Amino acid sequence: MSTLPKALEALIEALGNLPGVGPRSAERYAYFLLKSDQYKSSKLAAALEKLHTGVKQCPKTYALIDADLDVSELYSDPQRDKTVVALVAEPFDIIALEKTSLYRGTYHVLGGLISPIDGIGPEQLHIPELKKRIKEDEVKEIILATNASVEGETTALYIQQELANFDITITRLARGLPIGVDLEYADQITLGHALEGRQNF
Amino acid sequence: MSTLPKALEALIEALGNLPGVGPRSAERYAYFLLKSDQYKSSKLAAALEKLHTGVKQCPKTYALIDADLDVSELYSDPQRDKTVVALVAEPFDIIALEKTSLYRGTYHVLGGLISPIDGIGPEQLHIPELKKRIKEDEVKEIILATNASVEGETTALYIQQELANFDITITRLARGLPIGVDLEYADQITLGHALEGRQNF
Image 1: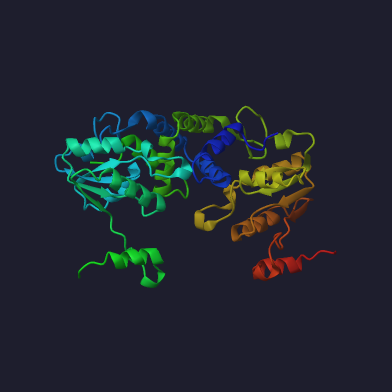
Image 2 (image 1 turned 120 degrees about the vertical axis):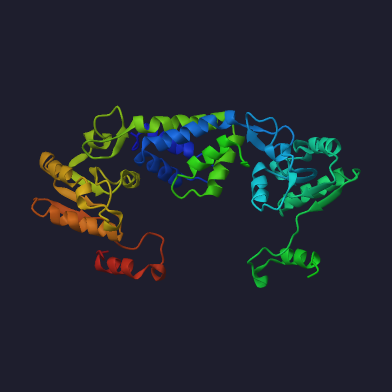
């Protein structure tokens, strides 16, 4: 005999599939939805149903775009400089860079980072498509905007070698002290990068 | 111009409505579902759609039950002792008590705890229905199984007074040291309760 109604158990199980959601959180979400108006569950259900049909990958930049668009608006926009391409691992990295409001170039999503432990090799990343773009759009600069992690560094290094024969500038995001962090709390590697990359004042 | 596809934004917003889910977690869940097979989103959507139609309150105990049941199986089961009633605040508290496998009585869900700050007064709790059950089922013992919080204690005290005229035993869950906790780390109030409620060895 189950202690919980089947419909509630099914929802708790489905919510428990989300990354980082344990059984207690799933219970909490399900009970919240049950106590809330039915409209909340229906709205979430509708959003879920439309997810895969409403979203597609941009065939040019591999960003996530509305299914009725041809290419990403961050690419088709004439105000964006197509000769500068920021290379990111995942589509959500674009949002982080866009939030700075400081970047007027375009993006290219690799679709991951090289990580032998997770079985991701360079052949799974959108590198051939990047090379095609470099030729087609006469790209002048590639900004390696990968994470400051082992996988991010490995991928950046690999791509730098892959693009060695192109006549382009390859840059990467500066490593240094994050704003608001005290020097004494910064880790050695960050501090090392900050020292190495010191700038004229 | 939005950076994200509308369908993805709608899902992130809907997921962000869940308690304790911030924008970053909502993004993570949505992206996970987008990268996963469509089946996962559909399954979650179906579970959400069935939630309100598949679950109802037991008219006797106010536990959550399958919509096609008349009363909770924890009440209708002839093996459960109807003369002993554990009084809990929320339906999920029943699961916690059932997991102990030590309780063979029935339950009554109050539907909350008295909390003036949240605008919950005793008139919103299922107390009249409890009194009716006490008479109908010739209840002998009420176990106050409310949280060991201010609201839980207030509610327990209120109910004890409300039931003063009934010829029943009123007990409550023991307060004391939780298993696995060192004496020196227990808070004063818990330790005080443990001392007061000390048992023969």
